[in-house]
Length: 395
Length: 204
Image 1: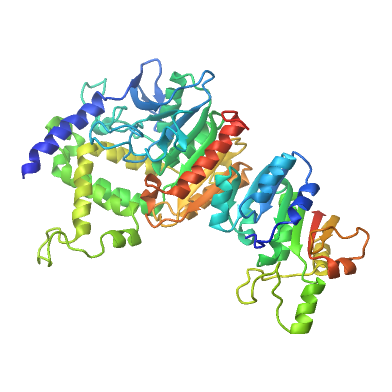
Image 2 (image 1 turned 60 degrees about the vertical axis):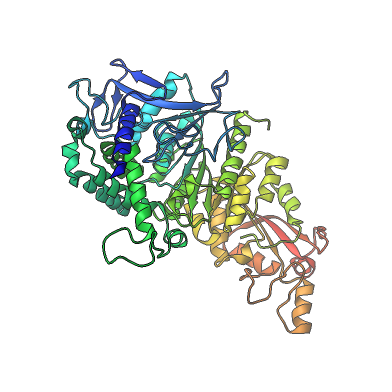
């Protein structure tokens, strides 16, 4: 294994980003505890973020981007660990639909994450050791509370827009529901108002894979100096399948063999799809913390916006003045269009202003991260119209 | 869902029926042309529902609040009296259950504006009488087997239905082939023969 040295180096880099990130941070001290859904007051805690563009004088041009499960705050800059370009550079940048020449774009690493915000790899001030599983369970609402404290820090009263896909979309819906007066426009992409049973099932497979890895050490792997590579890698492989679609997989890989003419009558990665998934698993381990993965998946599982309102989703948006844009993709089976339609209907019933676009794409759930011109044009039209309504663009 | 591709002479009539600044839902809003006109000309707070994905995407790209949905199945998600006007332009004939749709329009809106092609127009009647075939005209360009227009009606038929659902006709306009308004005090029978399109303003 000549690769042994590379992951070790990356592992240090990854840990460095968790505790001492490249991104700017805001530390919330004992005077500003975060009251979590679990009943615990988290204090102190830290939020790491990236920002692009300039906040205008009346602080009315801020757009908050909420990242997905395994995403981070590096929306439109080179990633400090992987060296890859930002995950939403297709959408965010100068002259892009989310125009950084016009808007102040902010994205924070979610609470419980591993790119600088307080998470299971952070030091627990009470014990002086890493939290590991001693970190209280974090919910989507908790992530949003932390983001609200971050925009307080910037003196932003109302966000012009909150935008996100998948778990980011859940945060968008939570923002619009529990901080409705602080959100002028909301764009929720490839998401739902709750995590389905099937989605919880996939997450549980992933968590069990992590916890079954002997290197996981009951979550104390950082102190033990190990990395549950295999477990997290298997979790990522299973999850990655749910982000794609059968037609897209077949188009890309078919039954093609990997660098060979015949099957080997063994358990090597004979098929290209196997090799691809193994690669996805391995590279993920290089940039993501296993315990953080447990916390993130749990946050999504617990999300059920209707349940917080006696089962009536429309009540979650009662009286909302926020303008909504809901986007789904035809081949997304993780958050199928029916989930988005449920949200759109609830918003209608609440009398909210809502646009709902289903984009024809065979690229599955991950389509929201890819070059999808129809999604860009819908978001562009929606943002421009909202900007005119808020006076950020001439009417 | 809006299935007439011919220049929309009914749009100006509809706009003239809508009070400025009102709340409007356009059911079957197509690419959003009417909603955009209503926002620009009448300053309405407009929303749309459209069956075709293409229409929805074009509408949203125009900056309109439009959702993908079906007039037959999705109107039930709207609250009572949420809008001042609910508009159904050139869409009634394409619904599966027009009577139910009309009832829903009047539940959701204080008023409903319905425009539709008149199947009682003399040209349609002549085409059927003389050729013995389902008419295919400039305004009704589809063959019988591929038409989205599954529930054509005449002006007289529509007037009957408004009575059945207990709606009040506040005003009605019939347009001839050139898009000109027919004289006002003509009896329904005259409109039914010479009106190529009709626009009705209904109240519960």
